Amino acid sequence: MKIGILSDSHDNVPAVKLAAERFGAAGVEHVIHAGDFIAPFSLAPLVELGVPVTGVFGNNDGERLVLKARFEAAGWTLEPKFALLNLDGVSIAVHHEPEPVAALAASGLYQVVVYGHTHAVDIRTEGETLIINPGETGGWLTGQRTVVVLDTATMRPQLITL
Image (tube, rainbow, N blue to C red; front, side, top):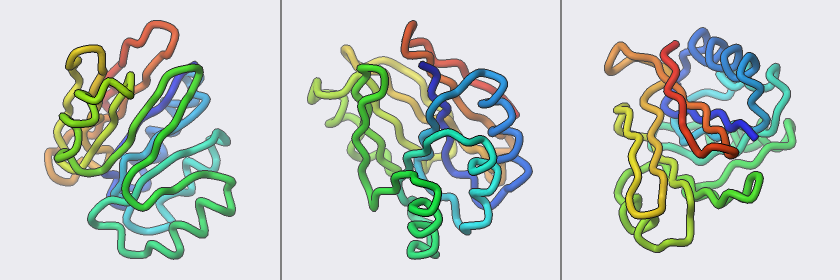
């Protein structure tokens, strides 16, 4: 199974559209968004992709009620701070902030820990846990727009520059 991972899209709809196109071309079957969508309209390209999406709120997500309603209307899952998934037998923890990442990895409960917030790509292994921060999809802070595709068959993440 291929999982598309993005974070910190910050209303950059053209970048989210590029991400959705790349995810579609890669055969992504599920998308994880680690927060900071900002406005509900920015979800439209992911709706068009037509795969399940799991997300968590970021610190800049102000329109939480409408974001939650849009997720529910699409049949997706949006959690306030922390999401747990099991996709293709792979246990995944998702949190926007970086602070709990070390403890989540050290717990040994998750094969993958996904986070965002820093706008910096971070792909590494701690013990048996793969840690992924896909960087920023919006590109507003660093000028780099990135996402990750994780193939659960190989457990190898692919960083994609948009």
